[in-house]
Image (cartoon, rainbow, N blue to C red; front, side):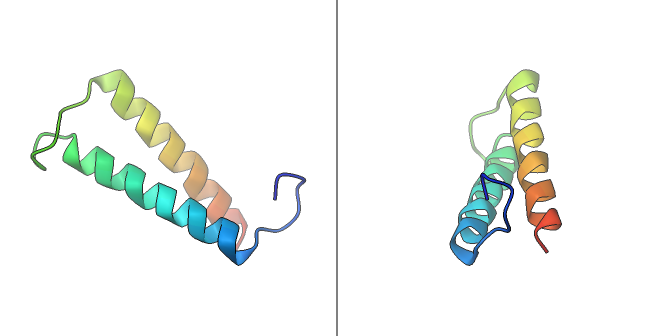
Length: 61
């Protein structure tokens, strides 16, 4: 996919797993999940990366 070609199943699975881990981190860090709270900049970075991965996955459908 790095060369602009379509995403294979393994690449897609890796991105989906990363997106899921990012979502879990965001949920845990909001104070309700019992995890460590992140500052606003860190949460924004997580959200930005989640959005980037989600867009890649949406484009590959």
